[in-house]
Length: 287
Image 1 (cartoon, rainbow, N blue to C red):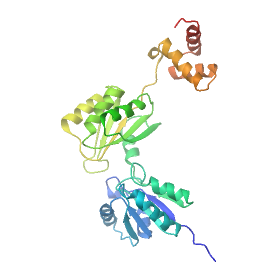
Image 2: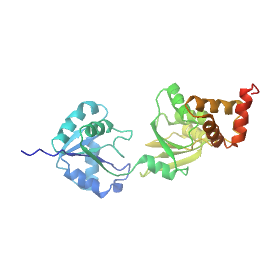
Image 3: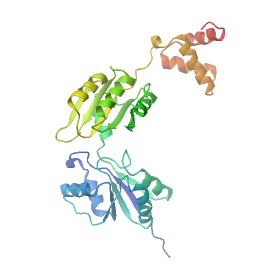
Image 4: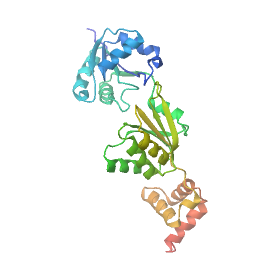
């Protein structure tokens, strides 16, 4: 008796704008799939027409509203040997789009998961932003409510990595204003809209300036916002009380005092002796 081999889940990246950006393998996977799970079946049809291909497999919808209910069905198809291709409206599945639940469920069942690399709004915006790209953090969409949005921004206000966000057209002016408030009016940013499309635009400048522009002119289309990371603190940025507080926090987290002093000195750009002296002074009540 032979046991049927499990299928393969293929996460297929789709163009974020120009269909010509589709990799050749995307057409091969779509035509050879047993099942295509699409975030929007109508957009899938338009894409296949643009690529000049005709899928022969079963096409099902897979979006936020039915992701939970449809995942078990797709996992069973995979377990039965099907090759399932997952596509979203644009970019890579599971990156701020449906897909994570299916990937997690497939991995749990020991099913092979692979990908067709494709265009990414995150990396494209980062590359054209003109901001540092050596270290970055993708933050996805911010909360809709103003208070929650400010709280989330405050969590990363001191992060030195370049930050990348997605945002909706009707919230972009409020979001940029909140960023200017939390990160600082002069922190640099880039608003990238309609990337790879006919009306592509990248607006760069200080966050306060970008917020005024968005409020006055309005911003339409698919939007990705890139914000430079926080500057490294310099010697003048920390008083003795703050130096002592940082060392104490590291000690409370389990570091030895010598290691804590060295780490705080490196972060602040200070000589270790200066940090040591601040800690000793605090111990004797001089701070």
